[in-house]
Amino acid sequence: MSDIIVGISELKVSNNSNHSLVTYALGSCISVAVYDPSIKVGGLLHFMLPESSLDTDRARTNPAMFADTGITLLFKSCYALGAEKKRMTVKVAGGASILDDRNYFRIGQKNITAMRKIFWRNNVMIDGEDTGKNCNRTVRLDLSTGKCLVKCSDGALREL
Image 1 (tube, rainbow, N blue to C red):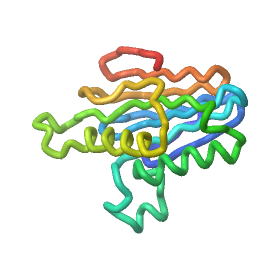
Image 2 (cartoon, helix red, strand yellow):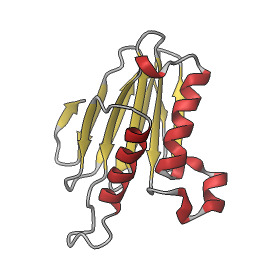
Image 3 (cartoon, rainbow, N blue to C red):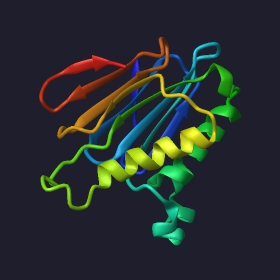
Image 4 (tube, one colour):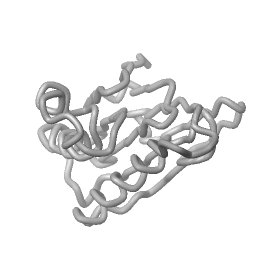
């Protein structure tokens, strides 16, 4: 099994069941993991900000930075490998309130809200979720099984 690292503002997809997609240091950022179990195609997105309208130039060069452009690109990239929306599972993690104890900026909450709106408009259901709270997370998607594991900075390990 080899790890494919997904950095901040990146997304990766694969149809190789020997791969695991992994992203680290999710604070207010959100990870979206999608998986088609019939053909073992999966993808992982690590987006930072809710809307591409915040910086349209950057959205053109790095669509994975934003919820609206990143989620769309994630699904389209999986479709290009043969995945079908009706078979795909969706698991999400992140959106914490790190370094924002007074909840002033609320970036994590804004990211969660933007993601939910996108899914709602596109009739996509979330199959597993670990969002909010105040911990950093690591997310791992195993493409051989579709298991999505989330490890929180407090030591908790959970399967979505």
